[in-house]
Image 1 (cartoon, rainbow, N blue to C red):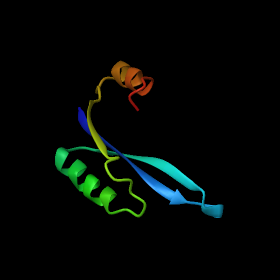
Image 2 (tube, rainbow, N blue to C red):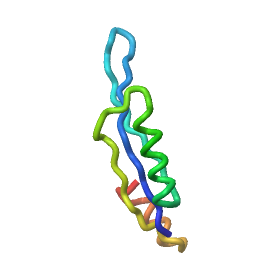
Image 3 (spheres, rainbow, N blue to C red):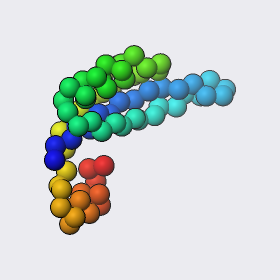
Length: 75
């Protein structure tokens, strides 16, 4: 099964003007949905320009493959 992993960063200002950078991730089932997520991410408050990345990830559909995938560094 092919999924799209969209990641981006936002900057938040906390107490005492300390800035925190969060990395957000959303999984999408199609390239069209991934494009929609990228568009929404760019409109978020604190979006860090050029931080967005989309990766095509092949997720196995058998039990052993899923276990190996979940235990890998891909997530």
